[in-house]
Amino acid sequence: MTRILLLGGTTEASALAKTLAEAGADAVFSYAGRTAKPVSQPLPTRIGGFGGADGLADYLQAEGITHVVDATHPFAAQMSTNAVGACALVGVPLCAFERPAWQAGEGDNWVQADSIEQAVEALPETPARVFLAIGKQNLAQFAAKPQHHYLLRLVDEPEAPLPLPHTTVEIARGPFDVAGDTALMQCHAITHVVAKNAGGAGAAAKLTAARGLGLPVIMIGRPKVPERPIKGNVAEVMAWIAHPSAA
Ligand code: 3Y8
Ligand code: NAP
Image (tube, rainbow, N blue to C red; front, side, top):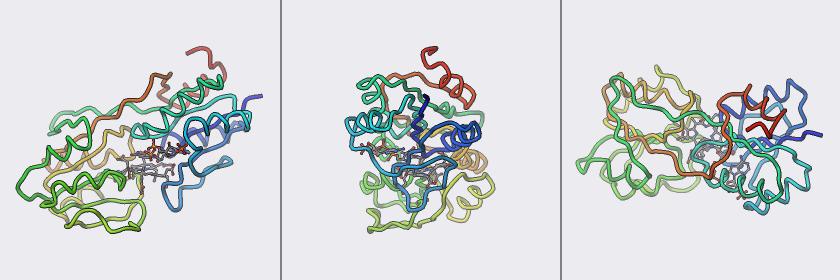
């Protein structure tokens, strides 16, 4: 009997959840519990960590999971690493549902950074106005350059004081659009944009807006995750669920 665990939290995961629900599949949607009120899903949903790879392995056995689809974000490297380990441990097939990385195009002015720290180094010394569109988990590293004014876009109101002295906070949940991001960046006289190479459509608007405004983008490359089969769209994932051995 097929029973699917869908590790979610992205646009792709929501699209797959819809198809699985419409197909009447026996599936569980999983959120980490990072945000206060995550978007509801058309599948039974669990919220919160599993307790590391071992906790996930126990969950897979206890719940009789027969397939795991890792549709988490390319920067959710710990979750993806745990999923590879847990599925290997208990012998449950795993595939990732992942969108391709963004590539710089005509008119883009990108500075590639391999880490958050490199993105901080790539910022100038002279005070600038930086759209830091990377969420809230990696803000502390930017305290190394307190001279900049940072425009932060967060999903929820920050509970603790922010680690940066000069900030403007915009509370918004994506997906975002080009007109909105262009207006936001003009209104705050942004000079630099910092982004994670999330790929997909949900966070791409700021890149198009930056190109239109002729602004540099510091693009943080994806962290490494262990090898696993990667599918690029819902149909490929559904075919994999039917025949997981066909890699
Ligand atoms: C909790 C679920 C859907 C999924 C929508 C996508 C698109 C909108 C764009 C910017 C970039 C950022 C951030 C972003 C986007 C989608 C997708 C995506 C980027 C929600 C969600 C959860 C999260 C977690 C959150 C992180 C943060 C990252 C904000 C829900 C809305 C910056 C990633 O406050 C926090 O702690 C937020 C944490 C991880 C990155 C960070 O390090 O802070 N996403 N985002 C998921 C869970 O609990 O499991 O609340 O509904 C989902 C989405 N966010 O169903 O349509 O697919 O990427 N999410 C980045 O790209 O850099 C915003 O502002 O331009
Ligand atoms: P992460 O750093 O890779 O994971 C940290 C821990 O959070 C994991 O070890 C796991 O805890 C728990 N976790 C992560 N995703 C989970 C899920 N879908 N279901 C249950 N537990 C989960 O992850 P993250 O970067 O914080 O991302 C958290 C969530 O936000 C994910 O759903 C991801 O898809 C979504 N998201 C992240 C980003 C981003 O920029 N990182 C962007 C958009 C959406 P245990 O070890 O206890 O199991």
